[in-house]
Length: 155
Image (cartoon, rainbow, N blue to C red; front, side, top):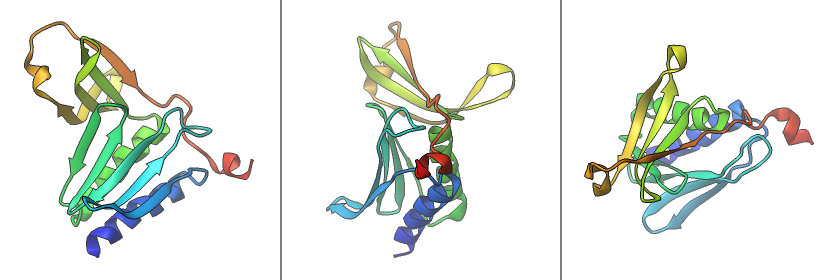
């Protein structure tokens, strides 16, 4: 139950930070998942994504490629980092950079901004295609709309 409490903490914190955000929460949606939250595209959010609780792991899924776990979610510091990552995706402060090989993602990084237009990787997903030394095309997934606000919630 403590892990479900951490998941609920994530949902509550996101709703406080983004009062207009629509989140659909499903508890035990699948035998492998303890809980899942789907955030559809909506005013202030140009794309949808999801996050879930699987055992002691919080999973973030963005786009067709980025899927990374934060664990153990019973650790408040880890949950805080997860909340920051999800908030960063919603607000557009963070971005996902996909590295495509032949049109298929082989690597994706969640990045946060540094000074002077530079970025630092927060988390990385990849598959074996990431080891192929061919030229890759990049695709950036970033919310330019700034995130749902309480004004939009009342609209």
